[in-house]
Length: 290
Length: 120
Image 1 (cartoon, rainbow over the protein chains, first blue to last red):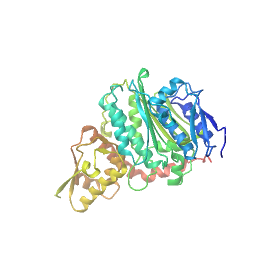
Image 2: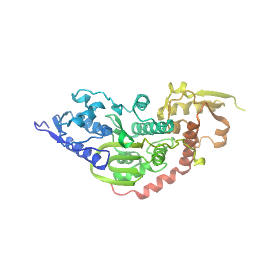
Image 3: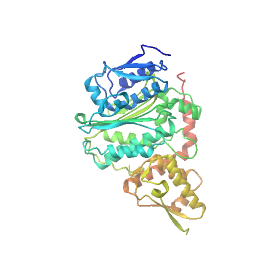
Image 4: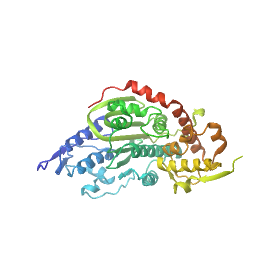
């Protein structure tokens, strides 16, 4: 309950297992507070991958849902610039900053029925003036992948607090990262609820990745969206990560990791990263042509 | 030969963004209503801005759930104003649907056997 010294802190956040784990630990710490003003100290955060604003949004949304106020402090200038440019800090009393390099796809919070707004947001920002000039095929496959992820989250997550999105282009590394995060029940609980199958979080992600598996009821086939995303990421030599509850999965040219993190993330996050320097043809082929 | 009716996705959905399962369901409902009325369907993809498989699974994929056989669908359902890429996506959705409905019990059964302990 009310606590005059409600505090939490966050270290460096990159789009990797450690970064997601730190956000889960922050969520767990914030979950102990109710009706408090919580000071979140970011002085140890020397770097923040802007796309990770989406899962951070989930973490703070849960805290605010518990009637807490979040106060951010100790931001280093570099981190403040990143989070002000992508509009994340706008809700925390910080001034907005111009994204002069045009490398940001701003942080936004959507409701599950916002699919058309979400598409308009992608259509607008994925053709940002300074985003890399990608082939039409690459750009379309990337956009479609993100739309599939959003629709999937809208359909399955049961997120009452919304769906959070943010992207960032890292020009020196020729990579474009985009993150979609929901504050929902997580894949493991959804499978149990809909199908009565109990499984660990990592196994639940594996289940969701299998062709044909879906918790959707009725006669609509599922299981194609993630398959196409995976094909695309393989071709592009990009990377995809899924975090749900304690499950963590990563797929990249370096290999595939499926594991459990120590702390539960309160929702599901999918981060996709593409190699923007890639010039392959991205024509989708029918299976008979493959 | 059944008289053919043209259904425009743009008009039924009410815009160029074709992504949600709910919007896909609207297309499915119109197609099946036309079949019920003894018509063939020409489905027009004109004015598409965004199209993904989640929409196609509902709009087209579920036609392969057993209510109609493949020969019927081949004869009664045609697609027009569709780009090469969108046609490839549509074909993937149809192939996926056929496989999904052919294997659905097997998918469920296989996973029921590998389920391990719960975290809680």
